[in-house]
Image (cartoon, rainbow, N blue to C red; front, side, top):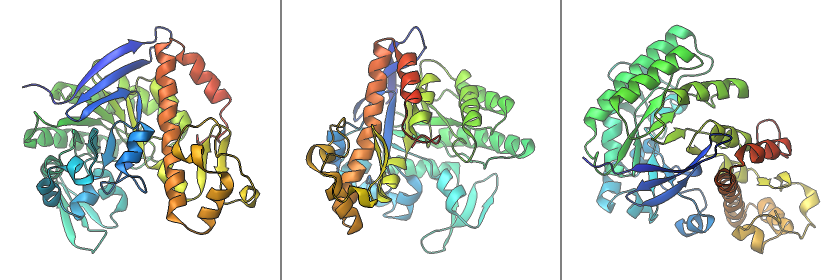
Length: 377
């Protein structure tokens, strides 16, 4: 059986070991390392697919949990899959729904069979299992789909982390067995294990034995400090095959992205750029800007003179300030365009540095001169 998604490593920086690659999918190729915008409801908030193309995004995410609740996976299947439903021509990825179940549900019960929880929209009792998650994702139809796993909180004691990791492995196998479209959709396994090297080693090794076409790293960016974050990612990567893509879930801060690339991560995603934009916070080459501040009311310069996005080419800080203060949707759209483009461009710079065998210098210089706080934004 041929794989629907393949990964080609195109260059390895001999000094840092960082790599570039191409993810070949049924809906086109995407260069790695990459930042992937999140389109929770089959839309990246405030942006059209045409604007995503102009930003040069590759893979876009959609959220299994939310699309299951509305409009329902059957509606999306009837439309011909999520790309046709939202009119996005590029590659797409769906998460398993597990993170939302564990983070949003007030009442949930975890059993070996799956998770029972309350619908966040109407309070109905719902049940999500590994098989159900894969069934939903098969109908949504994204190029890459994810195993159903448990994302545990941080910190977690060893026994809980071990039991959860072992259940995640069993769920991964059940999901793999339930996958009905392996020739059209690539199913990734997810490494869990909390802040315990032994557990992450075991989880990665067992997933590799199951032979997934790609692997994700979960259970990070859940409240841990940066040192712990890097430790967990590093342990997870060590046991994964070199020739398959590695996806670090839920990461979008500038320093986290660059440090992830140094650990040979190929794919990252986060809601950060659009969430920041909705609060008037913008990522620029001069640092973070809070466009709500009165100092921008008479600032008729571009948001970021080093940015080539539609917002920066055409509009001023004063206009963005005005739009935000008036609660105009166009302002949120412009600022979302910019923030996503900022992170996509960072990955373009990163790939260029790797191809020129100077990634270590680029990363060190960028982080040393980073005009954001210790969080990376």
